[in-house]
Image: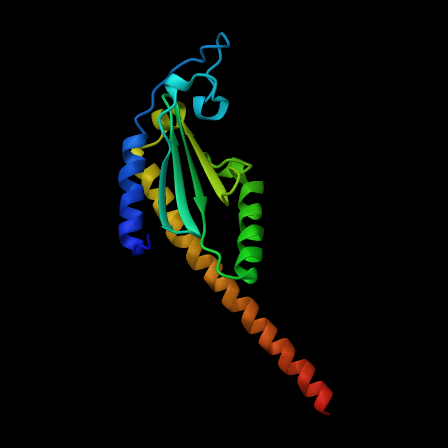
Length: 170
């Protein structure tokens, strides 16, 4: 179950690249609308089976492809309560600014920290390789950012504790 980071990211890259074969496909239930089938889930024949890639039980990626859209949901590694708090705050910060990230959803899928929705118009505007690279880079950088924030919080807590203890001793 436990994989190295490189093999985990390579597998995500491979599966994501194959699942981004999406095209313009109008909604079968509403005329003149083009809704992502992975979101509406009305036509089961247009939705492919989801792909779950897990590095560990705490860190996994869910790729849900369909004919006109693909949803990518990420669960970031959280080892303790500080990680959970920092991850929740950071993901909420990013999702509030979802309109600045073209493919980010405002609300993550249940059980995951953050989700991306790629529709056919994104594939017409953007390069597939760059989209895949963005998600892989996002995965790499999010872990680094959370670790840096955790170190910063621990450093501040240590300084505050030393100040508090030094005032008690005087």
